[in-house]
Image: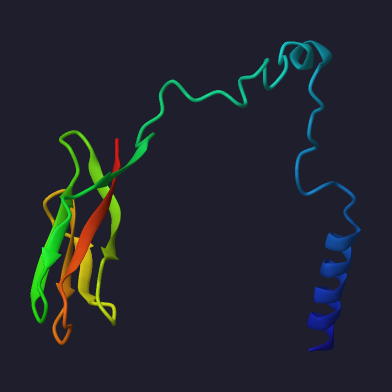
Length: 138
């Protein structure tokens, strides 16, 4: 058993004493290759818009038609994005309401390239107006 341990220890010592690198040495680039690289950015190229850009470049805010929701009633208002654009968000605004503000049951994408809001004006003594905002990307 001692002989096996001595043999293993000797093999390990010989392997560790090997001075050759385990990975090949890297070569430094030659001067002509470095000279041909040129600058990484020329002029205002870092600040210019890519010519092959994919995706949306402009967000437009549009408003739907203002609707009136009567006292003690429900109503739905919507706004649509024009053809060639895609809805990316929306919201709503209430105006001219009575003593307490109505609330929106839902405010969401209408799955038809627009935004819609379901208004709950129940329990309110007066009508309110609501206008929907839609954000469209092109």
